[in-house]
Image (cartoon, rainbow, N blue to C red; front, side, top):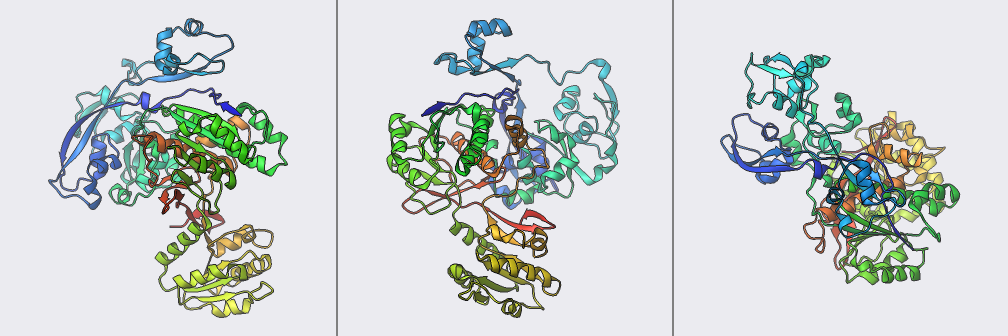
Amino acid sequence: MGINMKQHFKFCLVFLLASLSFGVLAQTHAFKDKESIKEIARAYSMTPFELIQLNPHLKNGVNPGEVIRVSKVVPKAVTLYDTYKVGRKETLFGIGQKLGISVEDIKKNNPVLYSKELNTRQILLIPVQYADQTELKTSQVLAYTVKPKDTKWRIAYLHGMTLPELENLNPEMGETLSIGQVLKVSNPEVKQDAKDFDNFEFYTVNPKETIFSLTKTFDVNEGELIRLNPELKNGLKAGMILKIPAKTSISENANRQDFVNLANQSFSGDEIKLAVMLPFGLKELQADTLLNFKRQFKKDRNLDVVTDFYSGVLIAIDSAKTFGIEIDTNTFDTENNQAKVSQIIRSNRLDKADAIIGPLYQKNFERAGELLKDSNVKMFSPLTNREIRLYQNCFQSLPTQEVLEEGMLNFMKNKHKNENIVVVADRKFRGVAIRVKAFFPEAAMLVSDTTGIVKQSLVIAALSVDKPNWVVVVSENVTLLTTLIPKLSQISETYTITLMTTERNRYFEGEEVSSKQLARLHFMFPSVEKPLDTNLFNPFVNRYIKEYGIMPGKYAVRGFDLTFDVLMRIATAKDKNQKIDESLPAEYLENRFGYDKKENGGYLNKSFYILKYESNNLIEAK
């Protein structure tokens, strides 16, 4: 069963690519004494990463007098769009008459109408007529005298203006301000925290930057950024001036940037053909009845996972479209049946798709991979962490336990100094204990007896009073975990203990093991996802609650993260018929993606988190 997905969310869009286009003039700049990468980037309306992209050697530092390439960005006209949902029996002519826009203008802004008929419930983009936001009435203009330490960014921030507004109001201002210079400003209400300016710097938000990319640029967490700039709760906009802690060093952070936001890249502009193959097991499926399905089949765990995942997929597709990416999506019910999978692929020419998310179950994914192994379609396994057969065009998006274990051991090796290491394992995980011992030959290894228990007295005897202790526990034995962990927590005032594991399971926290005990032991473990902080402004969470009336679960977030990553990778590829940049590490709400090519096979996601308990919270270990 194929479902041609139509947009069903009604909201006002600002298309970043359509509305924030730029002309670029090639220039050079000579470094001066004590001039920083951040200052130069800001002077040319660039991000530090854009500057480093033009001059890769800057990662290694700069020298006074050195000439580098820069791009002076010249903003063009901005086009805002609203959306219009086509009603029954409506025509382009009727819509044009109703909205006061010509049929040709509707088609220009919705090019698909040149080749396809208008459909009921189709979403159209309609340009919004608006006034130039930088135009100010004479009665609103006030005089401001430049003071010592004033900068353009500081003055604009104090008066609630964007930098372009200040520059448009003062075309003669120039790049450098003079003390005593009189400028025009638009807001008489100066912000009250001006006395704190010595402790902060100011940054003008560039087009396509996100809150996430800014946190990485300035090495500041999202909560702190929003606390300093409360207006971010309403969303980030190009031209905004943000207050940033002065101690932040972009030049240092740019060199250790690990994960990128693919939404900041340029897109190919071609339509993406996406197929979604999931085991709904239903004869009829309509996207707008998804919540009804969730209620009807609440007791069906598998369907609950599928519908949660699919709800995230839908919002990711819709979000990608706000970046100007055209997506032709079809959803298919595999019925968890290999024969059905084969029939769907052959009947719908899925070998011509750009990407397929699914099938969900391993046997069905491997069957689809076999049928499509000679095509250019990229196939993404969504939720399987077991070892699966990956053909050349297949991607396993969930890191395997082997990847998590290896990553945790490498993390420990990089952090290890003189800590005393004790490995505790039940018989099932003896092999894991041996691998830990191979990494740390000096470690004490304690494996359970036939009853599945390791005597606490043996563990305590292996601890050191003089050195920090790493206790690595790998077990699924309920009794072992629920007795050992509370005991370690109890003696942590006498011994310095960090509890670790290579494989966390549900028995590490429950009635007998509390998060307070784990926090006392600074419990660390590898994880596919990080916790979603719902206390911070999050457009996805807000959108999900608005659409479905509930908080998104981890499978909904997974569906969003994976789908958005797939669409961004394909959209940023120069040629969709060639391989996408699978190795580029990217991070979203809860998940990271960065694929390694397997020998004689497909691609495996090797990006994940090391988390630890700290003050009853789960945070990323650094």
